[in-house]
Image (cartoon, rainbow, N blue to C red; front, top):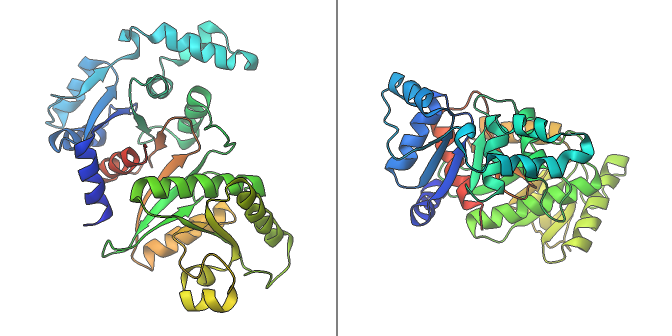
Length: 326
């Protein structure tokens, strides 16, 4: 059984409450209907019930079983605003401005997740990535011990048998060594949560174990050192060229003493440029399906979609991100 089917079964056993801030969109309405019909999630759509039903009627979609919630109608809105004010008043945010921000579906959706009125939030089909991340960081905040919000893709082979995680391919342009360590840890943790498999994280470079010297390589070595000190239980090593991390024969030859012998399943790229190029090569030349990006590093889950996403993308995002929750 492939990853998506396995995750569907897990979702069926424990459907999550998924809030969609960008709800006035036929794609989200269709996705919500699919999730309800399959009994694998409980969608919460943010917006005026009349407007959402009118939009659903245009697409001949029933909203039965969907929670339709306008921020103005939420009995806890003032509590959420007070919470946001307390968290952001040192930045000059007033209570009046906080109440105004909570009328924004992104901020309201993030507040629902923060306050356990929903399990996760999925946005971005209408909003920009910058707006989604801003709401997530300001309302939800960062995971304890992590100082970097990043992302990862799951890469699925065409036969569904192989699954790898690639990070960061969508958020942090030039990560520092400390940020690379955060990215490696959160990606490995999510890989384990989703697949119930032992993550083996490779820090990638154009050098393998000292084959080249350059400041860019030194940054990767520092990231490996930081990670090994902070997370000794994590199987992580580097610096690796991709073939040494991926091909056992090459790994044994180039890095014979490493804990990773060409069998990595989590690949940490040195920059956003490298990661973005890498996942698209795997997708277009290697025939791998790219699922994501999934946002990580937050206290509570909030994820970003491409504005060009399909109904299937939204459904898959809900399924996979539900399985990221412990």
